[in-house]
Structure formats: structure tokens, C-alpha cells
Amino acid sequence: MTEENKLAFQASKSANIIKSLCDLYGLPIKEATDIYYQSDTSELIENGIADLQCRSDKYLATIIWEEQNESNVNRLLLEPRN
Image (cartoon, rainbow, N blue to C red; front, side, top):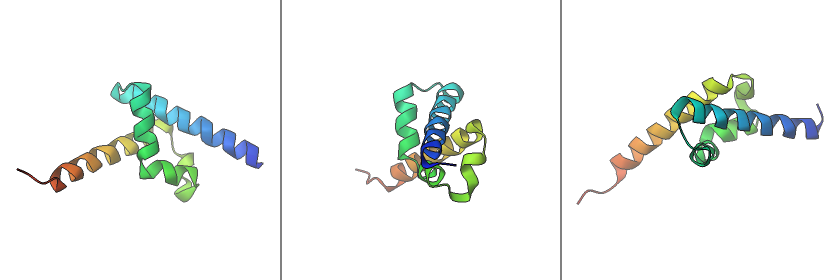
């Protein structure tokens, strides 16, 4: 696979996962895009770690959504209370 083909595949995979986030969770495209690109999982996918790019788009969207929710809970727990 050429470097150009790899980039095209990654772009398509990212777009499909973002679309799955929108479809599964009713998110606007901008919010889904932000969630995707801020996730640790997206970095793993784009770096080809653990063959995550071979998983289904909906499965990966679910993993990213759970990661986002866990991150939000941890942030709330660490915020100082008045």
C-alpha cells in the first residue's frame, strides 16, 4: 500500500467514525469531530496501533464516546469545589 493510499484510508476511516458518532449519539458534526480528534483512540487508529483501524466504525465510535464520558467524569472529580 502506497503512502497516498494509507492517507486516503485513514481519512475515510476518520470520516466514517465521526459520522457514526453523529448517528449513534445525535451529535452535530463539529462536536463529533472535536470528540474524535481529542481522543487518545484516534491517535492510536491513525498510528496503526493494535490494528484498531480494522475494527468497525460503530465499534470505534462507541469506544471514543466511552473515552469522552470517562474523561468528563474524571475532570469533574478533579475540579475544586467551593
